[in-house]
Image: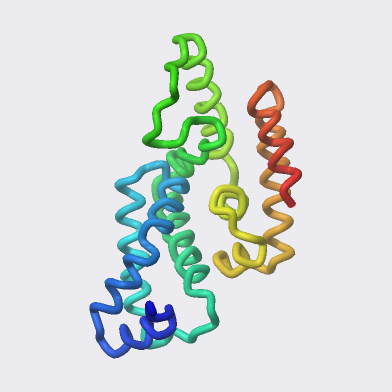
Length: 200
C-alpha cells in the first residue's frame, strides 16, 4: 500500500529524498496542468511547479497534517503564479483557460475544419483569452480552480486561503464579468457561460 501524504511528509522532514520524489510524482501532473492553464506557458508552468515543490520540501518540518496537502500545493502554486503575473504586468496570465472552446490538447479532430471555421475559432479564442487576461487575479484563480480543475468550493477555499463564502462570491463575480465582456459573442461563448453558471 502506498504511503499516505502525511507519512511521506514526515519522512521528508527527516531528510528522506526518496519520499520527496514520491510526493512529487504523485502531484506533479495536476500541478503542472493547473499552472499551464494559469500561465498559458508550459515551460513557465514547469518552472513554477518546481518552485512549488521546493516550497513543499522546505515546509516539511513545519507541516501539520490536516488531510489537505493537495489544497496546500494549489495554494502555493497559485500564489507563485500570481506573483509572477504581477511582475510581468499580467500580460500573459491565463492564456490557456480556453479548453471549453478548443479540442483536447494532443487529440486531432476526425476532420480538419475549413479555413473559415478555423479562423473563427481562433478569433473567438483570442477574444476570450483577452477577456480573461483582464480579469483581476482575485477572480481568475478561484474561477479556474472551480471550473477547470473541478475543485469544490471548500477545496478552492483551502487552496487560496479564502473563506468559502468569499470563493463562491468571487467565482460568481468572475462569471458575471466574463459574461459582460463577451456579451457580443454568440454561439459557443454564450452557451458555455450559461452552462457554467448552472454548475453551482
